[in-house]
Structure formats: C-alpha cells, structure tokens
Amino acid sequence: MLCGSVSVHIIERGGRPARQLSPPAPLFAKAIPAFSFQMFERYTESARRVLFFARYEVSQLGAISIEPEHVLLGLVRENKGIVARILALSQVSPDDIRRQIVNRSAFREKIATSVEIPFSAETKRVLQFTAEEANSLGHSYIGTEHLLMALLREEHSVAASILTTLGVRLGDVRRTAAELSAESPTAPVSPAHAAVSEQVEQIKLLVQQVSETPSGSSQAQELVERIGRELDLLKRHLGG
Image (cartoon, rainbow, N blue to C red; front, side, top):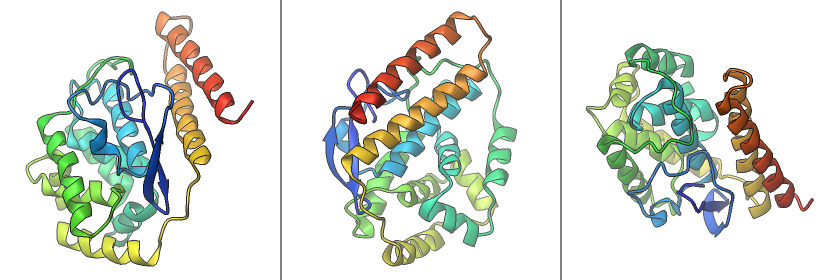
C-alpha cells in the first residue's frame, strides 16, 4: 500500500507478489511521490510493512525525511521472518539497534502521519539496491532480507554504520539469506488475507497514535475519524 491519493496492494503468493488490488489510502500516503508504483510491485507483504513502519518511526522522531535508519527501525519493528533469523544468528538484538538509532537521532516535535515526508537520497538508493540484491539471488520478489542487504550497501549511512558496528556483514547476510530462503519458503497468502492484514496494521498504528495524542485535541479527533474510515474499509474487505 504505497502511494499518494490512490493506494496499491501488492499481494504475495509463496512469498512472491501476484497482483494488485485497490486498497484504502494508507498512513504511508504521499511518502513516495518520486517513485513509480512499478518499483514496489515486487515487494512482499512484510517488506511493505517495513516501509509503512519506517514512515511511522519518522513521524515519532520528527524527522524531515525518511532515512535508511528509519527503514532499519521498520525492519526491527517487523522483527520476524528471515531478517529476524539473520539478526539472531548474528547475535544482534533489535533493542540494541533501536537504542543506537535513538541515541544518534535529534529529537523534534512529532509530525502528523498525514504530512508528506520524502525519502532522502540515501534511502532512494537503498530502495534501488533492493531490486539488485533480489535479482542477484534469482528472486522474483523483494523481501525484508533484500532491504537489509540494501541498507548495508549504503555504506556511509547511519543504518549501515550501526549494523557494521554490531557485526552484521553484507557477505554473511547474502549467504545466510540464500540458505534460509531455500529451506523456508513462505506459505501462500490469499489476496483477501493480505488486504485484511495490511488494514489491521494501519488501524493498530492509528490506535497507538491516538493513545499518544492529547484527548480532545483536533489531531485526536482526526485520528478517530480515520480509524472509523479504516474500520469501514476493513468491514468491506471482510464482506460485512
């Protein structure tokens, strides 16, 4: 679900994208105005959630652009699948990653998720690297493991610096990802399941934002209205 006024669901089958639906507008709306939807057609559901989470992390930190370290925060928030196993094998804790990123971040006032926040030049390169990494492994899809590799390739970024300091190496990630993806293929995901899953993720983050927003404020009211709209859309997805 990555777009502006029109959202796009990319549905995966066996870990691979199959087709697109017409989903509701996500919290990630307008975050990628400079990129075509085709660039994201290969992204798995988990990889799209990582970018969704990255946008949320940006709003919480008050950053003015989506940087590689925010994508890394999205990866550790997703914290399952191949990347979680790679980090565990490397004896790297998601909490350690988050702590280091927070320590290096300049805290500003939180930004509403409705505000357009662009990808930085570094992050755009990272997103381009994901396709190259997937192609090099012969994968038709782009998953979270390819995002991790791409972050390591952007060597001068905060994300790469933190990962390298913690002992995560690009060559090791490539080898481990190839082995794990071969032995643990992803179970098929139906279009209906994928659409509902993404809708639930949006509602969960909206609810979290409401809990952190002053009661009775205009921002809280806006969030409540958005939750109502998302629930209506979820009901339609469920055939209600």
